[in-house]
Length: 237
Image 1 (cartoon, helix red, strand yellow):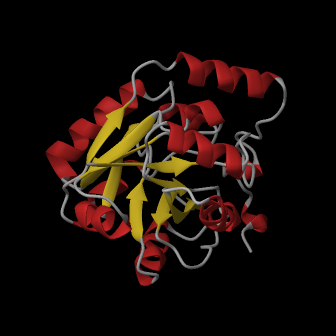
Image 2 (tube, rainbow, N blue to C red):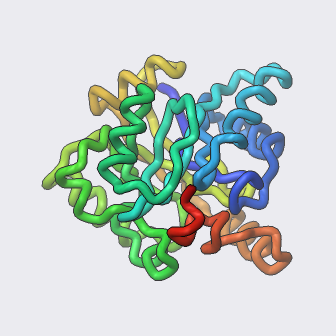
């Protein structure tokens, strides 16, 4: 079975961990695949993909992006090009699919992130054509919303369930992940399309929380601002 963390932020947006740190931590956690999903940016993912090749790691890197849509954040996986922010959620999903990518509704019911205007799309997951829903988000603040999202998905939407750490520090990489049959990007993509994935949360969040508090206090994190996915309408071009 493969293990993929499909929601990671680097210093290219609001994370504190550099690309090399993330790659080494992912390998140490036994992941075979990761997606770098910086806010409104794909350069970090592109750099990670190239760096993994140079380092000779047996680790696949997906080009991803967490897009700030007009109705909440959406993750695109297997992208070719950056998607500009503040399109409608519907138009963003359509653009992800036009690129041959996978559209994921991340933390759709997070009340915490909604306070900072960085939440998900909420009940739009019912009618927008997402391929997958993040039913396990690795943030320590998302326990209740994870449970509700998993219930909502089973009851109403029945999309593929995926897990992602939403890591903003190196310690959080692999905190949540997606389990899928087989190994490799083709197998992962097919598992998502056929709803054969499962979302998992790694036990023991203390190191991740401690790392987050350390980097936040030291000013290494740029959360809830423009790099954290909150942007003004005038900045969307």
